Length: 272
Image (cartoon, rainbow, N blue to C red):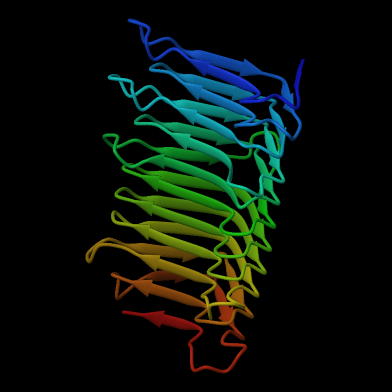
């Protein structure tokens, strides 16, 4: 195990961009405390990045392999960031696929931000292999994903964030399963997925207090499909479910009731 604390610059800094090879970087079991002058962990490389069992209290983790010519991916496993009030808890920039598995990101400005919008069909998978993912009590949004490929979200709780719980913007398709969103001041799930959206076992409650936000907002390209099943959306300030782009979505065994709790004229289900 490695413990990092009170360094004048970054706690752990890896930069091999000058290498002729596209070297991979693997970091395991690093605990970083606060009062580093830069990031707790910063990685700049052309190769694959793998981070596991990292814990950061205060300065943030930044992983960037956008210099790769082969679109190598990034994998983060069973890690935690907490209290990064000056920025993003975990920031990932890549042109390749991203796997985020069993992550906790709390009490930061933004919990996690994943950017792979410039890759070709680069996907993002949030998995809960070992434990639930938690993105809660962040000043802004809990989880932000901008991707060029398909996005899948499984086993997530996003609660008490100052803006949205989860925000996704992808040119691909979005699949959401086993996600709980509550008491986020903006929108619970704010999703733009051009190729369509499939949601199951979602619970969105009491979102939108500061911005009259919806429980669930979904936008797709006209002609793409939206399906929602086995979900509950209730007690949100704005619309319960708002769908833009699919005028005939498929809702199966899904309840949407008691929304517009501030009586501003929003609907339980709004489709256009």
